[in-house]
Amino acid sequence: MANDTLKLQAIISHCKEYGFIFPSSEIYDGLSAVYDYGQYGSELKKNIRDYWWKSMTQLTDNIVGIDAAIFMHPTTWKASGHVDNFSDPMIDNKDSQKRYRVDHLIEAYADELEAGIGEREAGSGKQEAKEILETMDRLLAQNDFEGLKKLIEEKNIKCTISGTSNWSDVRQFNLMFSTQLGSLAEEASEIYLRPETAQGIFVNFLNVQKTGRLKIPFGIAQTGKAFRNEIVARQFIFRMREFEQMEMQFFIRPGTQKEWYEHWKETRMKWHLSLGISPDKFRFHDHVKLAHYADAACDIEYLFPMGFKEVEGIHSRTDFDLKNHQEYSKKKLTYFDTELNQHYIPYVIETSIGLDRTILMILSEAYQEEDLSTADKKDSRVVLKFPPMLAPVKLAILPLVKKDGLPEIAKELMSACRSQFRCFYEEKDTIGKRYRRMDAIGTPFCVTIDYQTKDDRTVTIRYRDSMQQERISIDSVREIVEKQIL
Ligand code: ATP
Image 1 (tube, protein in one colour):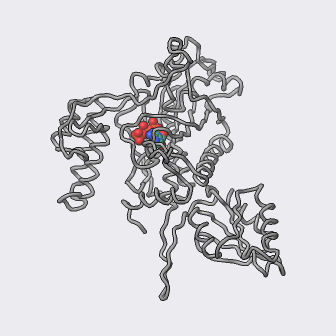
Image 2 (cartoon, rainbow, N blue to C red; image 1 turned 90 degrees about the horizontal axis):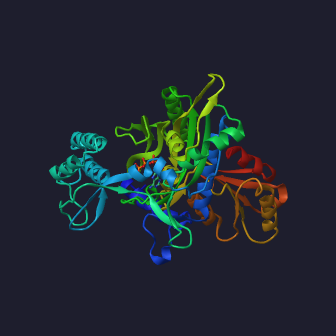
Image 3 (cartoon, rainbow, N blue to C red; image 1 turned 45 degrees about the vertical axis):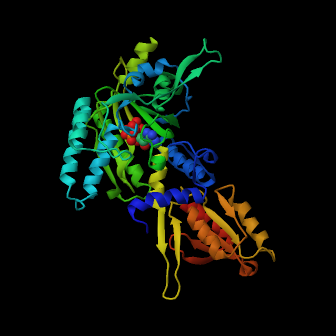
């Protein structure tokens, strides 16, 4: 098994080799921090999105889904605070001209201290790293840019390219992409590519509430693309400039936000654990510096190959967004609570998870290099141990040879199963090679049709994780697979 630093590299190569994820427009050398999902990656992505969507909208009583446009009226982003506040403190290295997000620069230094890179022993810098991160959180919370620059200089943090600490002042940099709506320059107006999906929910709050006759507490869920001009775009699909979010805004009575915040923290953590991931791979990280809209916020962090990092944010957004949209649009956005006989602007708890980061989390869990060597033979395999419900292909149907009526039986099985779940048919190469290819894309079940099938309608089913094989009736295959993928 590759160690953790190599594991991310191994996952990236594997994803490319087996049709999961490619650099965008690769024939032109790619586009930084933009990726395309291939034939298996897009299936995996769809399955994760569906799993989230089902748990939010189908399995919860009072949450409905919508699909709002990426383009929104430009005033939306004024009202939401993104025009003025959606920025990160940045610093430039004057020698290399490279721009860094201040928190990333300091965090990378703290990670090195902790890992004992340089002359230190691993772990010896743990206390110092902790102190640096605490100081950074405090300075960020106070918007103390001079203090942040001083911290970087005091610690003699260097640019990885020039190797110098010749830094500019710390400045804010807005992360929204803008473009022009309209065909003629004089008619065009500047609009933004949404940096989060949430605002599409807020501006539709009353449309959905009224047409759905929804009573508070209720939620609106949405999945879709978001765009951020990330400065430090690295770590594969962890930080992208175009990515997908799965967000849910839960509308509640003012004053009940603490209970609902706790409720959603717990509910979302349970969802992550339902993916079969061990609890010690997760932790909560409470925000010290709160976003401009929040009165409480935390992240669910997962232990990625590059360390604990945010996969989902849970934010108590107060009535900030609806109140501002009401003010800017001059349209009433209040709700009438029949039980209280009162009009009010609801408070909101948001759960916001990145689909691409979830994919990276699932890949990090699933990817395994197994040594299968015996005394007389060296052997190994790379296997993606996806939960069966998320696997891009559920069942591979493999006739032993491509003659003597075996492909016909295999195709019969294929037509019995393909309307229920994704199947894959292959008749080339040895069965061993075909099994390995299915392991590499994470197919949980393979079924081989051989000569015995012609006599007694039995087939060999092979389980991906244990590699065990069993003889079963061909008529029970569909049911066995269906049971595992619900
Ligand atoms: P970070 O601090 O890592 O930039 P954030 O706190 O800005 O993330 P949120 O605004 O809370 O992120 O967005 C919610 C979720 O959207 C995140 O938890 C993450 O999963 C996902 N996300 C945010 N930015 C990106 C990105 N650039 N690439 C991929 N996913 C992202």
